[in-house]
Length: 149
Image 1 (tube, one colour):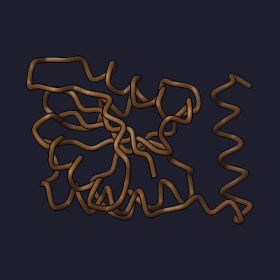
Image 2: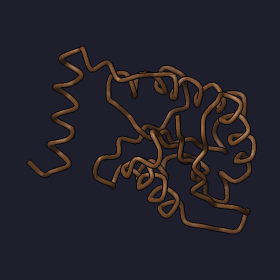
Image 3: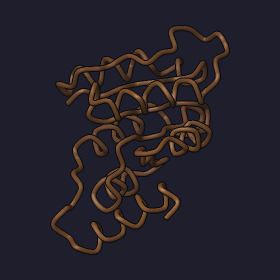
């Protein structure tokens, strides 16, 4: 799987470990920045990750900021992105299985590195349950909300 990874300056603290972990799992990393601890704005990295996912350059995305909340909010402003903020494995897989999440938001100041790895593994291992009518129906409603209908 191709995974777009974008981090702000706070997420940069775990970026190298995430790249190594994703590679170890057999995924191709699409690097959406940043490349230092110099201050950057999380909406910029969330946009870059979202655009990589929407264009097909990446299959899924991961955004990391201090809390994960800002990056998730920014990513969810982009039509076609369903970004889930996860601090637990249930949310990491359920957001994909039931809600077809295509981007995962993580907070580098909220969860430790071992949990980050488990959340990433769980998120990337999950698949949308497109054979369950109620999940498809709900996803269609969410997509209609994006269009203002």
